[in-house]
Amino acid sequence: MLLCTLAALTPAHAQDGAALTARHAALHAALGSNQFQRPLYLESHEESGDLQGDIYARVAQPFGVAGPALQGMEQWCDILILHLNVKRCRAGATTAGDDTLSINIGRKFDQPVADAHLFGFRYQVARSGPDYLRVVLSAATGPLGTRRYRLVLELVALDPGNSFVHLSYAYAQGAAARWATRVYLTTLGRAKVGFSIVGHKGDGQPVYIGGTRGAIERNAMRFYLAIEAYLGALSAPAAEQGEQRLNDWFTAVERYPVQLHELERDAYLQMKRLEIQRQQTLAAILLATP
Image 1: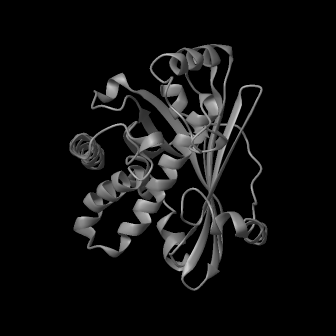
Image 2: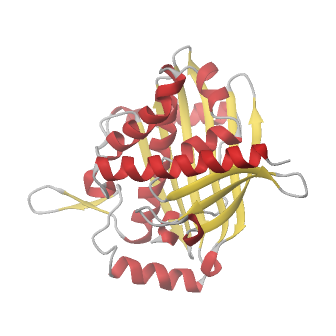
């Protein structure tokens, strides 16, 4: 299950505002009419153990608001902690001076941070301009031979009130990771599905993709919805933003119960409040330490 939460693989990205704007134009029809009933497009790929999920979405946020909000390691910790499997996020730096996010990833229930897997993601603002932003989180290795973890956010201005987001989430598996994933997907995760429609039942109901592509799609969506919840709460008073982000993320996830339902709202909120409190306590201790 943990491996289905993680990500890597170096994907192809727009890497400039003009290219991402062109991608928005190319997806015009898909953004206007889709299963999500909102301007959102999702795709996934799998090849030789490499998995990649991409989400493109138009958001009702000016670039002048969304761009600055999505830069900074502390902001990213506020985003990432919304995911039910992220137990803690801490901003720091390596001895070489690279900005890093130390992220503990674990189970979907409250557990000691020591029992979760710790990952050090390099944080980099690769491009930042008046109408285009590119942020990259990457880690070389993970458990069971996983490697090339990579989460990339791109944002481009569309007009004074709207921006276009591209979130890419990917990872590369080794033989041990592929075996562990197969075991999970044939036992605890056998009923799990993604969002891509691969057929229809006799009554016309969609058949959704399963397996590892279903897993990458679910988690790409969870992280995208975390970004959306973070941006949506910016207009609330500062003291209320944290609680609004939690509730908005859960509400957004529950729009897709077939793919994303895991916990009831009260259980999710209780777990996350504890995790965020521990995260804030640790940050305060580290700040006070000479």
